[in-house]
Length: 310
Ligand code: SF4
Image (tube, rainbow, N blue to C red; front, top):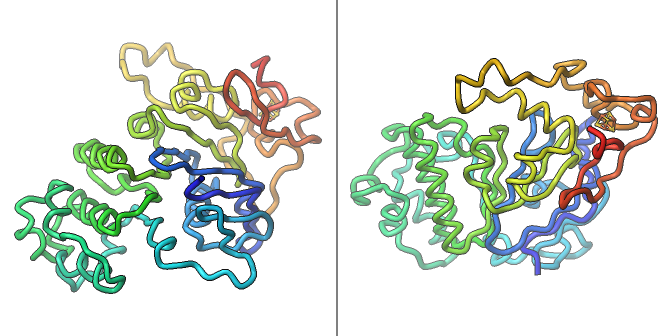
């Protein structure tokens, strides 16, 4: 059974339909990566998975149970099975409580057993007694993010929603945090990894699935390597073409895809038909009139009328 499933979920935030008809089933032990520009709805998707947003259509199921069914009460066990790690570890930690106290508090609150020093050692904060006595401002960004991961992992979740967890971390420490997440995954914790960074998506998400979002919709999905090596949707092609090549000698050979506009459309007035058509270099008349459904193609799913021709 899926840990969490979104069935045709649409979410309205003010004047914006932030999620449109999302289908996603998260399985035990897997890593699913969600990518897209800021404002595409990927963080909203994370919040929907956390059960924080009531959909205007569709269902959010935790282990088969509809969170928003009338009269349903979420058990502690189900609530704790899904944890979150945010981008801003400083804001998510209490600035006046020592690390050890912050980790122990939820264990006490939920009457759980867990060893704070052991988890600190597991996330590489050694000696643990030294780090347990620290206040958040006495730690580096990378160390604080390790504390956030330790706090999430201590509650023995089945799934961690990690929303841009390495964006605020120095580049040199990013790989260490991603490796730590990978290790927690190998111990059985599934991850929903939300990022705008395709390089870390490839690194952490390898072997797993990826969703590409645009204006609240999934426009391409499939195995991470397949999408990144053989993107079918012009939007993903454009995102990849904008990346600097790994080999600087190839810099002149790589040509960015000429988008018709660099700006994301106003989300309060999404374009008709294919929502990418005002920016798409391949758009034809049909594209502004008819929304392309997500459909199977070459082992992936893509929402583009002309994906096999591009
Ligand atoms: S449906 Fe048309 S506008 Fe949309 S991505 Fe495909 S070619 Fe471009």
